[in-house]
Length: 209
Image 1 (cartoon, rainbow, N blue to C red):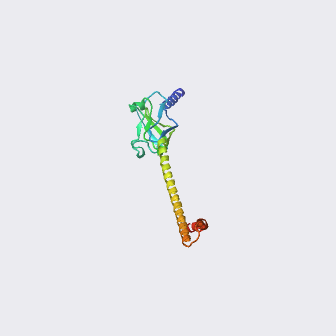
Image 2 (tube, rainbow, N blue to C red):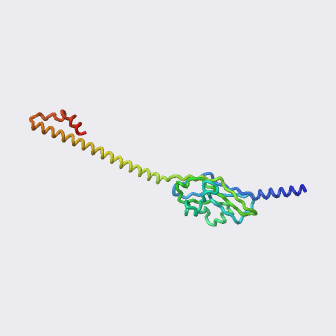
Image 3 (tube, rainbow, N blue to C red):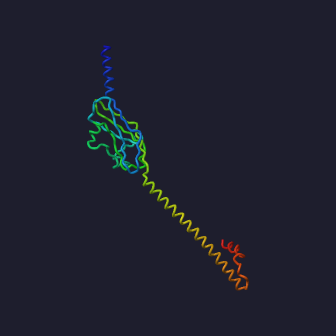
């Protein structure tokens, strides 16, 4: 009896070990805005047995959270399998559940979690630890923004300089006109007009400010 019980216990343990699944993901990946990025996901089994049925899903942030698929509003038309031809064979034989995310955007930055399920003697299900996707701005985009800000700043500076020059010319014109009027008055009154600018300059400038 003891020997039979031991054999049953070993058989149960062996069955559990044969039906383990492990899902692996790379920790992080970077992509530039507007490009296509591959989110890699592979799984291994503790036995040589392959299932004929199975599925995989990708989630963002947390397991069971927002699903990353073409059925999701934020990813419509931007998700595809990373397989080259027969995706079913890729998943079952090569044990790959990788996907590609197209036309990535800055808001796509975040953690992406891969979940895999297989139908063997029982349903096996597992998930990876997540891949952090970091989306950065392209050089051309950042240069375009810099150029736009540069032209806006240059235009504002030009307007300020033009306004300051206009005020300076207007003030100078008023001062000259005042001096000419006083000098003309001195000539009519038979006074010496040679130094009228220096004598009355302070009064003229003060009156026009």
